[in-house]
Image (cartoon, rainbow, N blue to C red; front, side):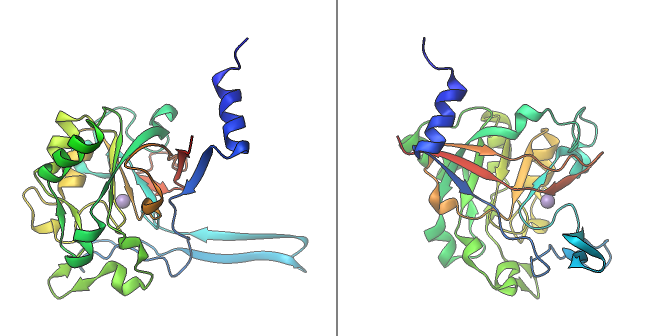
Length: 261
Ligand code: MN
């Protein structure tokens, strides 16, 4: 009798024909947090407070309290995050069906373009060129934009904020409805601090990756790293946010399964 698919998968993991790539940034006080203009509310940076460490506060145990905004570090954006997605059923971290947290990924490598232009925008033409080489983006796939932006280890260079706002690559406003509606993707992932480009507050509509993606009941992943270790297509992403009741998002340990067979 043929082995069931999960037994085969377990063997592939232990045998090394399926690799696990961690797409998550370290979460620590230095983790960059999105900066909004003065008039808006502030997201907390990550904070860690020791409760005890094998000492008089707890002789045999080590543990911490932590605090942070939902959208800190590598994180998941739920549809309820944006006003356009607020009325969908099951649109928050606790109610999104769990099977949505495992999905294939298409990785579009524009690291060369982004290295020369911090305001680089991925267009529909770029995506159609990718599809000619790698096949049509299947419904229910993540689209991840590889820019190598996560290699900017200095938080200032990573946020890249100037007098006129942030300068970080992202999707072109005309690409977002194409991916959401004509390709029916599950969500969009970026290496920057958020899913939208740094200058997206100037776009029409503003913040299209939030407005249109979440307005189409789609998800987001931000502050991804190690996208250079993924194939253009064929990786499987595991993206469960914390089950925060009515949460708009959550820090997330994003893993990719990659077959080397
Ligand atoms: Mn977010």
